[in-house]
Structure formats: structure tokens, C-alpha cells
Length: 298
Image (cartoon, rainbow, N blue to C red; front, top):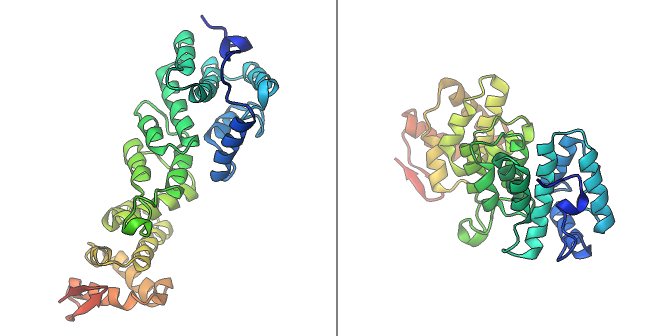
């Protein structure tokens, strides 16, 4: 059985290595795009291994120092092997498709499959390979420990190039929402919850309404509802405007809508009056012909 406490048992001495000057520069470039924090940074912090500058290791001496820190840490062997697995994915990346150092380590040490899936998913996240990352992170065997960070990352880096109007439309939040619906995590931070709801509101007005109803205390639920209305006012194309005014609102939501558009921040929008009139027509409180960006309701 492989002895992970021995440096050369884990890391090969021959062949291409990922932590030369160019490799370190490439990893640091990815780190900058993620506001200075990679997922492997979060893992090392949670395990209390090294410090913020431990990864990527600089050259052979840095790699030996990080190996020592991992071996001497007080975490379980599975957690230590998981970090080694992630780092060997760096080796596999620079050595090409025929290199399977990470999986060989896992097989020789008996690293459970769920740890391999998690670390490979986080590795792909750190390389901005989000589709490949989700194929792993949405696996039902995984805990949702990094769910908030995953949602934040996927929403902030939503692919604009695949959106409508040749990239000039709203970002495509497909991956972020696919992860949320598949993993069904309980989000713990306001940032993740706010970004997720923004993505929902810009993707499906109806789905965003039902999501907001999960929060029964008045303040957050009203805040979500107003964020939904604001997203429609921001991008009031015909389909979204029609969907908003056709929602099955309860009395409280009806009041929130009216107040937001007449006395709240929504009144500043040039489309606020049209949305109110359209809602009146839909609910039977008004009889008029209203036009919003080409949408006519009689």
C-alpha cells in the first residue's frame, strides 16, 4: 500500500511538473478571477493546513513543505489524501491524457469515491471548467459544504456569450440553477441567497415568486418580491412583463407590488405605470389598452 507520508511515494520525481514559474503564474491568474480565493484555499483553511500562500507550492522546496504540512496535520487520512489527489490532478493536467497519477493514488490508498468526486469537482471549478465541475459536484453522494461558494461562483461567472442578442442580453444562469435544483443545498450566506434569487428572477418570474414564498417572515420575503419586480423593470421585454402581471399574487403580494411601483424604488422606472395598468387589466380592476415594448393587453 502506498505510504503517503513519504514525499516521493506521492509526487513523481521525473517528468513534467505543474509548480514551475509558468504553472504557478497560471494558477495565480485563476485565483485573481475568483477574487483571490480558490476552492482548494477553502479546503486547506477548513482542514487548518498551511496558510493562504501554501498553494500553489513554489518549486520543489515549496512542494516538500506543503507535503510536510499535510502529513503533520491533525485531520483524517482521507482528508490528507484528498488534498494530495487534488494536487496530482495538477500533475495529470500538465502530463496529458495518459497520465492518471491522481486516480492511481486513490486506488492504491483506498480513497473513497466520494472524496475523489468532490476534489475533482473543486479542481474543475478552480480551472473555470464549470460544466465539468457540475458533473461531479451535483453527485448525490456529496455533502453541500461548499454550496454557497459554488452558487456565488457560478452566478458571478455566468456565461454571457451564450445569452441572447449575440451576448448583449442577460447572462445564462443555466449551470448555477442546474446545480441548485440538483444538489438542493441549504444556503447559509446572504450573498449566495441573494445571487441565486437574482438568477432565478432573471430566468423565470414565476419560479422566483414561488421561491420567495419559502421565506415566511415578512422582511426577507418582501425583499425578494421587490427584487423580482425590479428585475422585470430592468429588463421589461414583453414576455417577462406579461409573466409578472399575470402572476397569481396573494393580497400581501398585491400590496407590495402596488406600493413598490407607486411609492417605493420602482416608481423611478419609466415602466412602473405601465406594469400597474397591465396588472389592473389582468385582475379586472381596469379596462384599458396598455402597451409595454410592443405588448398589448385589452
